[in-house]
Image (cartoon, rainbow, N blue to C red; front, side, top):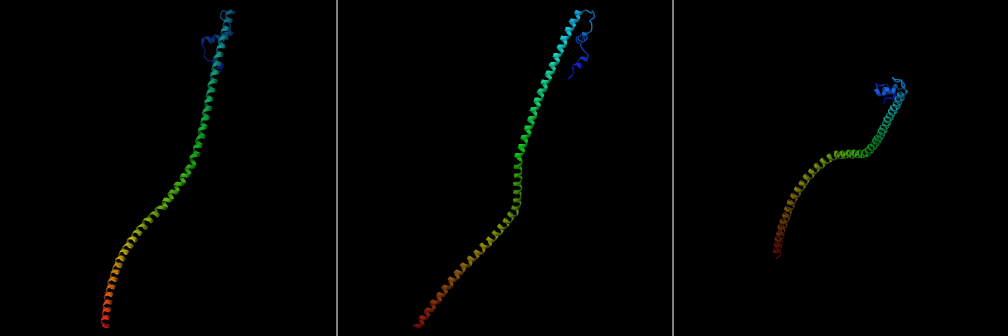
Length: 174
């Protein structure tokens, strides 16, 4: 902002030049005109001073408002930084836990893959063994039934022979 001296040194209007030259004698040299000019110059100076004070007052008001807004902005920035830190603190533990759990799941998946393959292979072997067992069991049942049939037939023959022998002994004993 320009000082009073700088304002007074700038190119001036005829009114202000008259105010500055009020200390000089007027052209006519009449003291009444000097008093009028001096009064005029004092009122102009008072007006100028009042305007300068008003400008200074407004400047201070604007400066205060700017400072207030800057303070509010700084407070908001500080609060946002606190909120950001709180959010990061909330998400950090969850990220670590999630990461650890994901790693564990991946490890278990790697362990499960060969176990699954082994299980499938053993299931195949079990099915093959079960089929072989069932075949042998059928074969056994066929042979058991044949054996029962043969034993039954053999017993019948032996009974028949025994009866014949018994008859023959009876006949011979008679």
